[in-house]
Image (cartoon, rainbow, N blue to C red; front, side, top):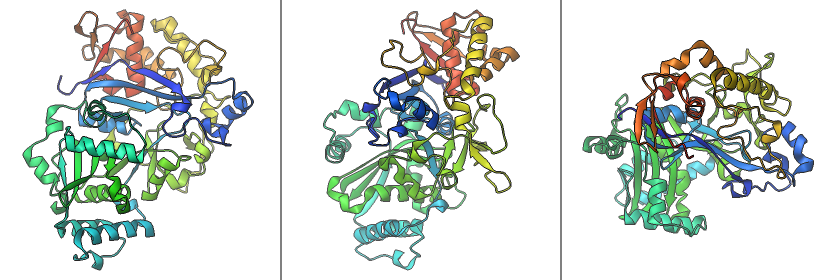
Length: 503
């Protein structure tokens, strides 16, 4: 299965917004910020007690994927938690979560960040280093110099594997910082050790770990040999004080989680870890630092803007400087960038994302842009009628069980027994639109999957190649379409879809 993308059939997961780890379903007097767009807020603000605002995630459990695939999916808005690969529905969800990335040159060293680096250098060297002679804006040089001259502090990159020492620090951090007392070795392994990557990427080689652990000495243009998950363990006087859990991608470092010892709270280890990761990116000749998700109206998540950043427009598959769209996403709103003079009649074409071509959006002064999210996904937006028309054609012409969806399925009424539509909804920003899926059927492109896509039915334990899409049962057709819409056609071509007829 080397090179294959082995996944369980995708599904939609929803729960009351009260269980959201960011807003807890409570935005105080700003209840309109629970809605993706103003038109939805106006439609339902006087019916708040009658509707259900939810925390909505789409994704799959992944049994195997390579780092190139994950790099590609990260740049489509995906993240992983252990083996669960997911992205948030930005329309229905209570919070708007945007993929955010930055580079060392984008960081504007504030007084606070400069102080963080200076104090760190003094603590680990006793003031006996040359970093004080470097400009305060050169955080990379100051961090590297301090660490090379320290006898008290060091870090070690190693495979993302369990140890009692790591687990005990995790428990201490969770209990003291997050007041989370429901921890176990099993949950720690599932969250921060389990991965869908192969052993060669998890374990690496002695040579690749040695190079990574001497990142300060890498030469310009030298290629980093390790790609895969990693734990970077921070030690002070031989005591484990922090763990940076990361995925090292071909295009950069993706931060997964950071654990620190509450006894070292004065060290500002959270800020320091971000600056260290950026220093590592520069010295290892990688491009980007992926900070996870950015939520404009959540203090726990909007601090990431302090590192200089651009965020992903999931409908274009391109990154946009955060500063240029701050007003568009204020008060937690959804955005889709479009030319001011452009008129839209349906969801935008969603091209497969190639990380090697993933450029920033050309927001030059010659072209004026606006937020077209309301025109597409608002209560009077064009997406819904277009999707319903395509859903009927997909069902009638190709036997794929799509149904029309009423607008009230976006934020459904509590009195209705119906919950979300079965499976992935017809309209989700950042997913392949149904009209584009219909084009794939009408053009015959769907047959490109035949002889390539593998299907594994749990009940029969039988694995088989897709040979004729049109002859598949309706439920199997729908599962294949869900994978195409969620992960892209090219990724689907190398997929193995695990499914159960009982699910």
